[in-house]
Amino acid sequence: MYDPPYVLLFAGLATGILSCIPFAATLKTLVNEWKINRSTRAIAELRGPRMLLPFVAIAAGVCVFLASCLQLFPFPTRIAYGLSAAVTAMMAGSVWFQFTRVLDQLENRGLQGIDLDDLSLGKMIPQPNSGKE
Image (tube, rainbow, N blue to C red; front, top):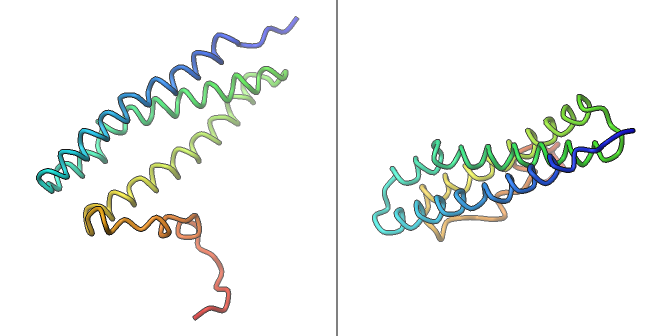
């Protein structure tokens, strides 16, 4: 009889959710510090290990959660973790890429210079020229 990994499912979900707390707290602290003194050091710290460690923990929790969800349907463990690791790596990479782009805009142009329309997926993946010039 097959026993799905319910404990890992809830542990991955809890890890992902609970890792958001230090990520959000650190983000809020460093942005407030940047707003007070406009220091590029605060922006540099937003790209550093103080932000990356909770972000990686969130991604790891999501990976375990996704793999456990796949194992609810009798997927073999290796396939479930392989698929979820690939999906999580692509998702986490694109989120971190967009996050650093926002930080670049914040550093170069300030809060009013953040252009949310500039963060589209089309900017990440080159699109063929649609005849607009």
